[in-house]
Length: 544
Ligand code: ISL
Ligand code: CA
Image (cartoon, rainbow, N blue to C red; front, side, top):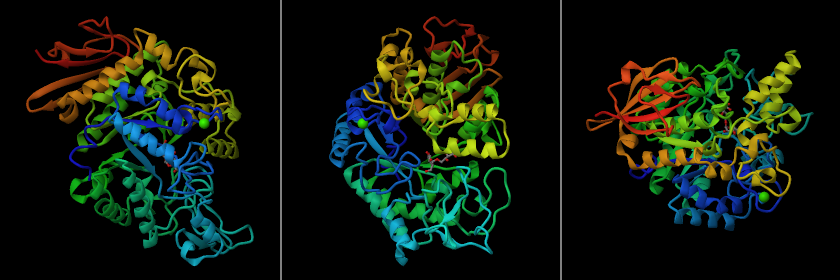
């Protein structure tokens, strides 16, 4: 459990290191690049940075396939540079959160190589089974739309290993106590350096209860055998009590397919497991069954979902963007012409909901989905796999591409747009992933020079959130979820604030229900009007 309220008082900024800032011209963001932007981040007001994996990795899944947990990948820099980054961040009052990916390793991890070489100890680190009468060990599905079983040790082998993600991400065997010991050791390695916490990748699926066949499901066959199992809860308690608590470090778990009940079990303070979780339901309010089939985002559905989670959990992580999600403002249908307004509204919403706000690089300047032309511009393994699968299902090419373009994780992974020079000032070389075509107008330098800029409003909202105890600690009370307007209260010791978001590109009259709130704390428009909410306007109100 985190020391005092460390995790509750902070605003977190996620960095996807390969896309942040490149300093040596190889087209890949690096640690020196991040160091060069620490003043920028301190000025924005954030006080924690979460890094997507910096560890040695063959990059089948951009670092989420880890080959050495106690190393820094040379493409990012050295361990000395990382130590310097930690120290420089600390000087600016910024703590570091590392990504802990322990459902699987890379197949290029020493453990997997030794397992392949026949060492019994390491075979038992993974989930290896014989096929059944010439068939796969079970009927499970895979997160990346591939087969979750691959031959262990060459085509002639009769054994398979389990991988819920790519073939190069073999799942660890959490029934083996040695795996737990290894992970404790890895966590202590980073805690000793002074990191303040971990973001725990797909943490609620690590412990597989059984490998029996699953109930056939269009989403993910087999998940009932590994979602939030008792074994997983027990591991989380051990890591909490034995490793995290002594350091006062906090955790945020990425928890897939959780409902509010499962979520409560994972963050109930008495159970001593995780400090907060990322749930997904609000990110799915524009999807049909699977994320690849997107419909129009209906603001009211989003509002109702947010309210449900705000009412159901005492504390949670709040986010609208990360490296797996298309840019949020691009999901609004009437975004055209209102990019800046929508981004400011999201700043207001994120900083006034109850919970720890997590923002993602580029969100502070209103970066949008990318203008990818075709699949050759997309790098993400998940996108390529899904495209292939859609082809095998005879989904026509134009629809297939539309799905990928709109939903691909690469939409969030394009290089950070710093200025209007070539490659948006991200690199002097060839960027590893295309720079969004809108960089000439959407970039940090232009935004900061714009009197109407987006970042200044984010900065203002971050400061407000950090300095106002009602926004930090107040209880959430829903007030209005109309087709266009979301309004909710934050309440602390009899004091109240009202947060109001117009989630459409149309002006709407101020709803009757909130007319009693006549004292404006802040609006995202300089020329706001008393009785009208302008397109995507955000307001914070007091009474009297
Ligand atoms: O992408 C998703 C939601 O739209 C989910 O399927 C889920 O976030 C994801 O697949 C799990 O993500 C995490 O683990 C993966 C890695 O590829 C992601 O980048 C990471 O965030 C495997 O480690
Ligand atoms: Ca570089």
